[in-house]
Length: 217
Ligand code: GRF
Image (cartoon, rainbow, N blue to C red; front, side):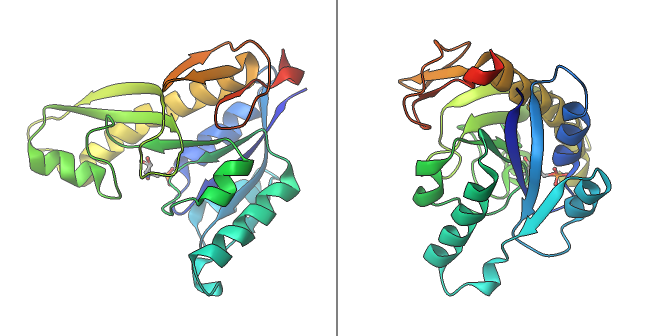
């Protein structure tokens, strides 16, 4: 059995596209069952449709407040019974209601805990760091604060601007995401005191502490 993955996006969806490609390979261990967005017309939705994957939108503006929007998102996610939700360039804070029900992996274009938030690449450049990168982590109730699953470093080159640096980060970020999701799906994981280990003991405790996709073992 393949792990069921729902991918959430806000924009171009190049990370979602990389996951769709990987999941099409036999033996990857995960299947993308849906791609969802917080806005209509997010580029990645068309890519998913071309790949024959279901899409949905939960536009923030359609709901009265953050609570209602989170409840709607939670309901949509529940319908797909995902083993993993992947926030791949999803520019919204996912609320506690969703996090209590689903394991959410987020990617971030910086080496956390440096430069959390929506402007990580710009902030890293402005600070003048020589090395930045990408992080995959489990989402928790903070902004980019959850347990780190993997990180990859990227050098800042002389003359880089936000666009050029972000492009280089995104190319390593996509590979990392594909690797991380495949390994989580095939091997399972555990989290203890923020330490993420792949290859957990195969006991589901709660989505936020320990879970192994047992069907995949
Ligand atoms: C990624 O760098 C992600 O980390 C950030 O937004 C970018 C999304 O790119 N939050 P794409 O939509 O997957 O092309």
